[in-house]
Image 1 (tube, protein in one colour):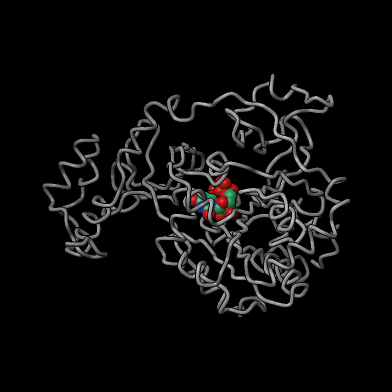
Image 2: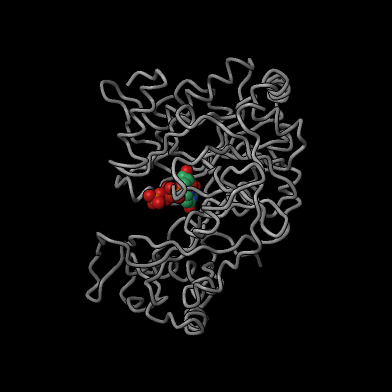
Length: 416
Ligand code: UTP
């Protein structure tokens, strides 16, 4: 019999056994106090949770073993300028034929920004309202106007922000976009635990969960049935991008055309790093395949390394704007590596009171979109001018903040 939502397969005994196997019996501490409905919900959550993931934090050193790193040349601005016309023409042709779709990754929690709302609802305007979602739609509209047709936009949310996100788009009439081209889908959730691997409870009948990272987007799109729509619409390229870069160029015809004409499985927009230790992942080859090394894995030796022209070998950072060829995504076989991310996780204390910690207090478990690059045969790192295309909003102030993004928006003539 299939396990559907609301249909309980696990009995209390079976749930206890599953928890015992991973040393997590405390999850049932308040079981007897719960209503019938809450009991069912908890058993269902236990049934679906992948508790083996939690074991990973006991041996973090085993998680991501890196291969041999070597430089991967990026297509730089000079070469792009020389080919701009032909790239743009090829990209526009694909967009007009409906072969390009866009995927907005908006399932994150945005904890650093510190607002309880979805990050896209943040008002970055000063004298007028200008929401992050609105900035992104405005940018996408530039291409819609140039191409003369709408582009399917898939928006990934999570259990934590789905309803708020959908309502916000509807309330604002999709910021002038054609709503029939916007499709929402939810990513999966994963349990979160303390530094010793003990799962936190966020309610007496609920284990703490966090969205399982942005790497789950393709599986979640498929599970939501939207890959069928991708096929029916004839979409061959999916431009995946982060919610928090307000200068994000989406379905950029020049970028699309370059990936098509260079016949690459994936294109990755990159910027020149502003310092050797800037906190962005850099493109490279790893054991001969394209890859991205996160900033915390970049050794001093790699930071200092030079390529054959004497330029820094690992100097192009990714900005979470990738163009994936659908066919290659569908052929991807292996699962993505797991990352442990330290986070502030709300939890019930010993007395059963909810605590919202001020500092990170444990791990959440994530798959990352950047690891998908390593599973694909070829990648085109494509340089863009950072002042024009990279204004991430991660923090309220300081680096990659509301302040810095406002300054960059103003520099690009956006009325605030
Ligand atoms: P970040 O790595 O900045 O994470 O996300 P975050 O959760 O939004 O923010 P912090 O770290 O808690 O402050 C980069 C992009 O990936 C998306 C985010 O929405 C953002 O567009 N993302 C992240 C997801 O879609 N799902 C996730 O599980 C995590």
